[in-house]
Length: 337
Ligand SMILES: C[S@@+](CC[C@H](N)C(=O)[O-])C[C@H]1O[C@@H](n2cnc3c(N)ncnc32)[C@H](O)[C@@H]1O
Image 1 (cartoon, protein in one colour):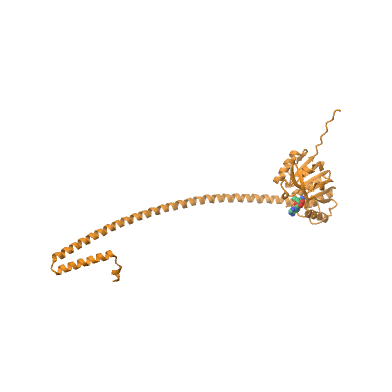
Image 2 (cartoon, helix red, strand yellow):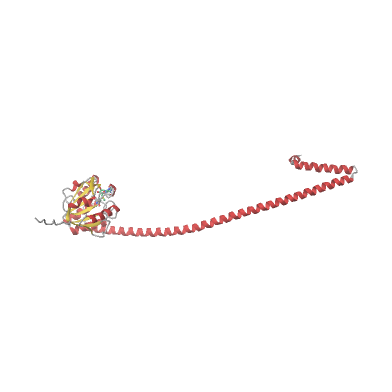
């Protein structure tokens, strides 16, 4: 019964027709109408054969459709495979190129690092050698403040002290006090000169004064407070040392320009030669620290170009430049009376 309920309407109709035909055949045969029974059997067989043919035809159509769907699917699959393979090949090629690029980059990086380390090591060796020579020339009375960083490097100090030893300046003016002030004072103590050092920061000025006192050098060196004030040079206003701090100075034989620091403003040290040229002796030496920096290199170029008698002395050992200054005095043309 359950199975009968699951049959479709069409299947029930067919089943009903088959049952009716069976009953008709049976009834005709029982009633003696053998001809009628045979005719009904014939019709039934013909119907079955027609149904079979129809089913076979449907199966054939279905088979064709399935084969076509399969062909289509295979086509799509092959196309997808081809695309996938192309993408993988492309990826492998790119990965190969990238690997080569990376290897080259790594090799260049290694070379640069090796070169940088080599340069650093050589520079470090130079500084150690300079330091040994500095301490070989003097016996400090107290621990020396550190060199390098904000202070001059040992190579710069060695050059500077050699200039003092050979040129024997009577008056040294330093812009920016610190460790260098102590070393310069030691050198001047030997040669018989004196040092005036300016500092715009009262805290650093005090620190240098304390260091000079600890080394017993206050008789040789003096640190002056010189706060930054606006100064007009070549039509531009710069924050620069208060000129009052140098008002009494004449005949400066050696000028060390190591301040103000670059953070105080663009071209922070440019006013130095413009303001102090008049304070220099007729023949003087100018040491300009950090001359490799852009602002300082530009200032140096402009000074040499525009200040008569100022010439660069060439390569220095450290990061400073040495300039010599000779005052050019123009003779007044005699007037015809
Ligand atoms: C380049 S430093 C002068 C250094 C000095 N000539 C020497 O060689 O020791 C210029 C100015 O920077 C300031 N200064 C010194 N040491 C500093 C530090 N450690 N940090 C920041 N500023 C410093 C001081 O005011 C100094 O006048």
